[in-house]
Length: 287
Image 1: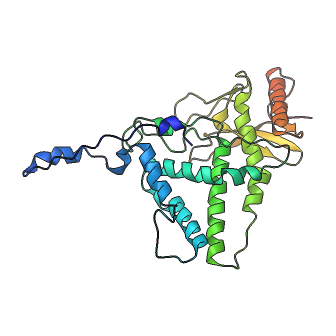
Image 2: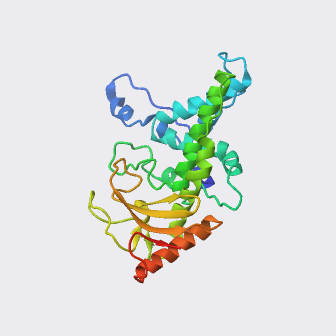
Image 3: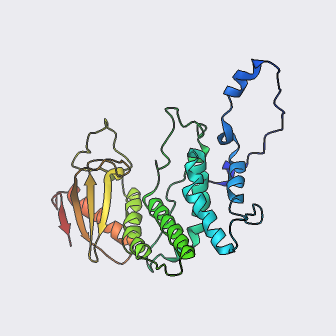
């Protein structure tokens, strides 16, 4: 998501491109960056209009509901793949559309924050430069629950498409699994950054390929939480969880869960404090 300041820039003044009878304007044309160079508020407006059946009427569908669903699917699968800017803006639109239904699924006594970090991707001056060394991954800096929210959007978009394609389509258990297992764990993983820096730090500074040391403080980028009905387990991974590489992991601490996610996070903090004071061994269990 992005804030109002990201799209508040006024539209640029109109200036007709001079036309030359010779090839003098070749260098000028080479400097054009295409649609990605447009102000973000214009790109947002263009993509948003692709969902508006009145603004962009179509002759392909007679059922308004089917057209609505297929337009959303086209944005999810098609427009997001145009380039980096389209991916970020289209994803922002989809997140705004599905945020309310996502929050309605949160279990009682559980908390949720799909956007724990303020995104700065759309404020990047090199946003449209996908070839430069400063170009960042669209997934970089994404919160753990933000990733779960994006998975929920993917599941919902797919289910809605199957429903309009066939009345015999049945909903699976993917949404239930998200809010029973993934969302609570992701929320705790985000809450780990609220713990003192003695126990948790945001990331691990080292050469690529070097695993984080076995000890405190732990880099949040390399941590994951696994929940059972009774226990919460904190794991340290060889590679950052955002990496495409998969390596080994080891148990850091196991604590007994209590009612709220914030309470379970506090139990993890107490367990790490016990490790720090050498009251509990690495990989131990705290009752």
